[in-house]
Length: 238
Image (cartoon, rainbow, N blue to C red; front, top):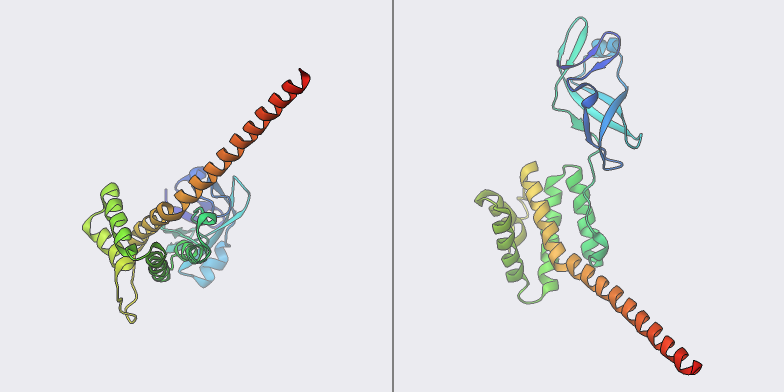
């Protein structure tokens, strides 16, 4: 069964009640229930190429907006394509609090660009972050980043095409400003995971480790102080 709107303004979906995706609000993979479907008569009168439908997330009750391409107008139904477009995409998550301020601001913007499929802007921001990273890591910063990229390539088993795109965006010394990097969704996804791993290894891992050590030191000092206090109480009681 295809996806279509019938003459009674009801949406029929090929997945029935099993239609689900990651909610852009609560981030949960949840079933969706259609709550606002365009009127059949209006669609027939105007014959748009795209049809927008509002769903309700069964997990958090938030509205989820989806557009479908129109395949065909029939006498009793309007057939829709299955390749829908999410108007609001799920936001990518990352431990931004462990990043230095310039990196936090730029990577937050980069994540927003990626989430909104603005892949050229995303690539340019990743290139700017890499330049800051080289400077922050010192004289051998570029070499350190290259070594990490090679390690990522080997761990993730990246092919030459994906690795070449990532390497060109991150390591190019003098990129042509008149030809900004262009990415498709697949290459952008690879670049995103590479940037996450670079920033995690350089800042997040260190920040988490330092925080854990600080907590351990605090409890050790508390325990030491409690032990010393108990000994003083024992001596005074004697």
